[in-house]
Image (cartoon, rainbow, N blue to C red; front, side, top):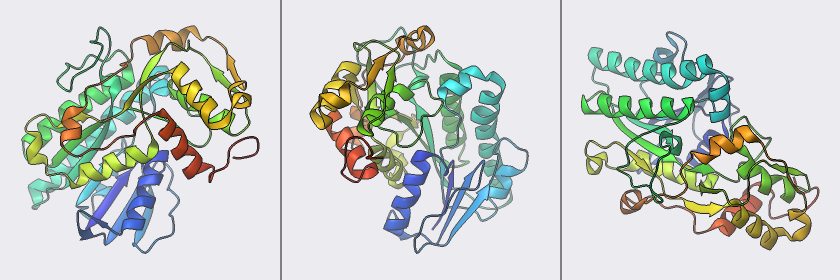
Length: 331
């Protein structure tokens, strides 16, 4: 089995790569080749699988065709610029998040017209496809009403995924990821980055900025859970999806205050004291329209498994990124 990961240089892409390298197989079939693609050639982790790393801008004409030259059996399409950057740079957001996706889908269609080519394609969508007004708990059948450019781009991607799948171009499945926390490494340009920052930085003995009120509620999943979602989606028999090819992943609904309480349980009051309240009107306005809670029973019934609570999410971060250590200098 040949696998292509587009967006392999991102945090989730790197963790997915390591997981696949360790497993050596997907859906019971040995992985014979793994191609990692991103705007800069991703680092290749150690492993026994033949792995190729390439730099590719999916929005460039011909880039998708080059990535498909070896006819990968499974494609993970993770490539996107994040919410804050997509909102700040309108043209770049649509070029990367929409045009790149459409060019990939179209390249698969063109390849299939020349020869029999019908890959499995896993597309990472987002809960940003939903926006106010919303019910308190959002069902999987909720109409898409994005209120950001990023959410709009992902919503269009979901519609394209469903249509190309319906027409037999590829076997597509879209997974709406919760906000991933705790994200390791340096902060990115995602407007939701502070949800990770208020845990990650204090655990490393660093100050964190909180731009919203502690009453803000949001929907979370750990990086470990996100990788599990991707692998399960790739292995899932999509006949069970019908025409609704995208679904909301299991997550945890928690307030910022509950995050901070979990941080205190994990690392004590000294860590909590490193959080500095600094309201940001722009972020407050953006977050106000984001989803807060989901009914993800459809995904759960299909075998997707999320985290048990916020404490587990913090424990996963400590175990995976801090090697069990907490406090100043742990990073």
